[in-house]
Length: 305
Ligand code: NAP
Image 1 (cartoon, rainbow, N blue to C red):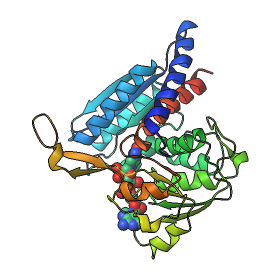
Image 2 (cartoon, rainbow, N blue to C red; image 1 turned 180 degrees about the vertical axis):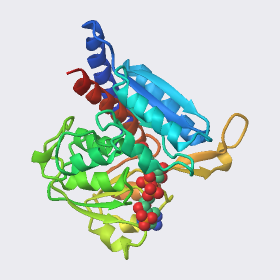
Image 3 (cartoon, rainbow, N blue to C red; image 1 turned 90 degrees about the vertical axis):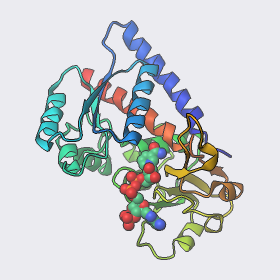
Image 4 (spheres, rainbow, N blue to C red; image 1 turned 30 degrees about the vertical axis):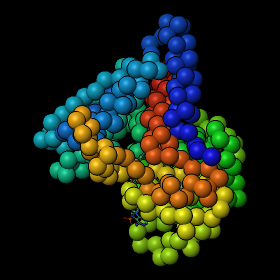
């Protein structure tokens, strides 16, 4: 069965729209998000435009703050401090990656964790690990929501996560192994958590044997066709986080870009063995964007409480 992230994300956007319409109807101001983008990375520009569009759809006010790639770290830090102190902004994100001369960790660490709707500040990550109220980063939140909405239980399951990045691998592993009583705001199924989690990375030996014991595999490596059918047991659930651009002759032509997006899973051969599987595109990607909207509303509710 396909885990239809596009459909679930549309459902959630509908729920958010209803909530924000009610805020508006009560005469209060609507939630406001700021997105800081540095330079002209085409993928980043696409992501930012998609985020702005999604905000407009649910009634979140969104502003884009664009800087040229030459901006100094100090100027960007000053912008972060300004946004931290701007009472009209409920949450903001600094679109990654940043140019090489800017230290990402220093920038992220400067964001007030209450406005950190990407959930990437050390404070939010630490609070999440400890089961304290926090803002969870968008992709892990989206994966968890997708599992919950399809009522895929994780208790006692063996979850293999391929990838150990701060934005996907580490936080999703931590969320799924937590005791449900440590559940955080916005969680829709108490049964999520309590999994036995194995985290794999590029130095892992015999990835295939580990994957063959998994009930759920979450792949976030950035390698097309990394997960093949011989690595998957019958009836496993497969979550493909990867977004890779591959050149495709068929996608060439006037007005087209000459590439298509694929995940990290050999979908064609893995899908017949899987009980549930996310497609790329249309799986985790739309869930990530809608999670940012949920995080913004969460920050707004905390801010205006
Ligand atoms: P990242 O920071 O590059 O991390 C990739 C991880 O995968 C690393 O831990 C790396 O191991 C591991 N890895 C790479 N090749 C491997 C291999 N052959 N076998 C086992 N492990 C391997 O990437 P990321 O930011 O987490 O993103 C991962 C993918 O997800 C990318 O394609 C990205 O575009 C996509 N993504 C999608 C969304 C979405 O909304 N759908 C959101 C975020 C990211 P080492 O640590 O040993 O290097």
